[in-house]
Image (cartoon, rainbow, N blue to C red; front, side, top):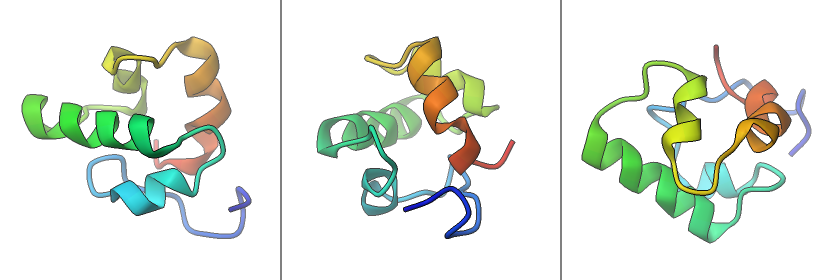
Length: 69
């Protein structure tokens, strides 16, 4: 999936399948995002992804453009 190929994703609505289409997010990371969201409630911003295990500032920077602000 290229950055411009699809509309930007809502981190609070995105599915595991949609997450896996983003370069750098595989099945484990996608599941971790969904699990975190289900356990802790909606993300307030895309920056909250750094609270998910395995997500640091570099990873967030690489995938930020795929999500709504």
